[in-house]
Image (cartoon, rainbow, N blue to C red; front, side, top):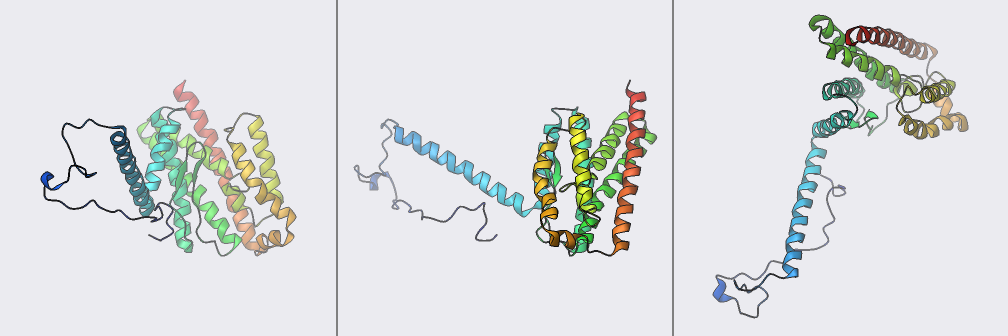
Amino acid sequence: MSQNDPYVPPQSGQYIPPPRYQGASDIPPDSPYHYSPSAPSSNRGILGWLGSAALAVWAVVKYGLIFVAKVPALATLLTAVISVGAYSLLFPWQTAIGVVVMILIHEMGHVVELRRQGVAATAPIFIPFLGAAIFNRTQAKSPLQQAQIGIAGPIAGTLGAIASLALYSVTHEPLYAVWAYWGFWLNLFNLIPFAMLDGGWILAPVSKWVQIAGLALLVILFFAGIVNPLVIIVVVLGLPMVMRRFREPAYDAYLTHEPLAGRAVIATAWLGLVVVLGIGLFQTEGLLRSVLR
């Protein structure tokens, strides 16, 4: 733990213990440490108890946060549980678990590729109603490698949705079809080529204009009532990244300087995923209409 750990308060003082004594008879009556069983409690005593309780709570929170920070899996687990609770406000809890599982599979795709490339990053952190995020501590070596990190999530998520659909075909349990539906939908949405979404990173080396197309699609989906209104947060946070490409030609040139063959491969992979996810979403939606009506 570093000295600048944000969870550790600055050491601004010392604790001075009271004088040692062997028994009550050794304490002078006028001493502040003298105790009389018949003495009534005071407001100062109540404040002391409240202060002690506050310190105890702070200690639990402080060391709990340190423990979570030192064990990344706990941060993922804790935020996942919170997200299940949040999504349970909108869906049955069984569906909420499936949504979180599909998001986790997606994020683990990013984690695998990050580790393969040697890029340091945090564990996945779930953000209720916005999915999850991984924060890089170091950067990918090139825009094309960043695109590979971006597409690894939807690839894993697509496989997770297909696996859930396969479970439905074996068990005929509608819940697995519901999980598959959300898996297809979440990963397809993330392929929209705008800024912070995976599609924005995947197609960043292709052209800056795909970002404008992605923004237009988000606006259409928003006014059509198809996406969560919280998508406005994604747009607001992503706009500076898009505008930078138009304001700084050197930055845009850096993102698009990759070899044409590499850019074509990543664009083709993106398009293939869009097709697979679109078909999967369409088929699963039709299946659920027939099963759940």
